[in-house]
Amino acid sequence: MNAIPLSPRPQTADGLLGQSAVAQAMLDVLAALARVQARAGVIPRSAAQSIAGMCRVELHELRDVFALQRGEGGAAQALARQLQDSVALFDAAAAAYVGQGLTPQDLADTALLLLSRRALEPIDADLLHLLGLLLALAEKHGGVPLQRRAVLQPSSVISLRARLLDWALPLMRNLQALRQQAAAALVLQWTGPAVAAQAAAAQAGALPRMVAQELRLGWADAGSSRQRDRLMRLGAELCLTALQLGKLGQDLALLAQPAVGELVLASEQALQRCASVHAAAMQAPHRLAALHSSSIWVLEGGLGQVQVEMNEWLGLLTAVCSGCRHMALVVGELQPQVERMRDPLSPAPCTEVQPEPSDKSLPAAWLQEFDAEAQARQADVRVAATLTQARLAWQKLCAAPTV
Image (cartoon, rainbow, N blue to C red; front, side, top):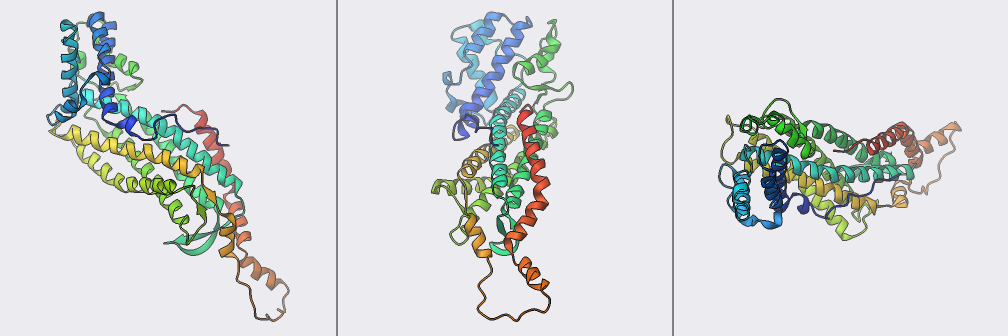
């Protein structure tokens, strides 16, 4: 059933969301702007080639860029100036066109959208993979009794299939919501300077839209980058996804404890992965709160807001990006201990002689009440339709276009 492989990306999220990735995203925006301006006839094609040729992160000293991000323009302004200086070494005329008409805020915002899209692609693939693994386990293990637990203390009987669906279904809703909110939030929202500065050009009015197409982003016909509501909704969905991944990691670690022993994790590293995902999930609500606070702009923004927003946003993306990968790896090697699940639920042998009941139906009813496997089968019957619907929903998600 699980036909979706893990995303082909580095084992850590640093390659996607580290300082090098942030700088490269900003350089990609500047290169795209130069190419579009050249096609529109706003700047010479030779200048665009010179600018795009220097928009490679390995050509820049990132330590200087991020050390100078305390100002209002932050790292975006520092990197644009460094790019301008680098281009000037080979083409002095082209240096004047670097980031023409683009504010540091628009540069930072667009780079953040690029980073988000690049991180959401592997998140989507890894979540699909994880869901496929959980649903495959649910289909495989039918009629297996499992105890409900509150602080690891057993209570009533459910089934392993029901437990697996309790983990899978919220994650499936998380994936559906992430796709929906990403489609709404990953849109370019430039205003004023990027258009007005080139108003004399025939295609100047279409420049932002052309840049959006160049960067594979959506385009908002109205509004500015100060409108953060769509991005905040996407942030809220990232937070919910991180929390659900953290719950899964915590549950797996607890059920794998020797005192319970209902699951076996493949290695000590798997336990560390669960702990890491849970720790990141505990920080996610605080990151979301800081992100919402930073979105309360004072007119056109204030000192430090860009840096806070970038830091917390990347933290949320990292938590989900790493969490999806870690949980997919852990669940892929998970070993449910079916016999262990059945054993503690078996009734203890009775040594006393029981009187013969007058009603012959009572022993069967009594045995049914304490037959854990019968209760598990009943639980499976109750969730059978849910499992079928979940499988169909998963297949639909696999076939649908991703972020």
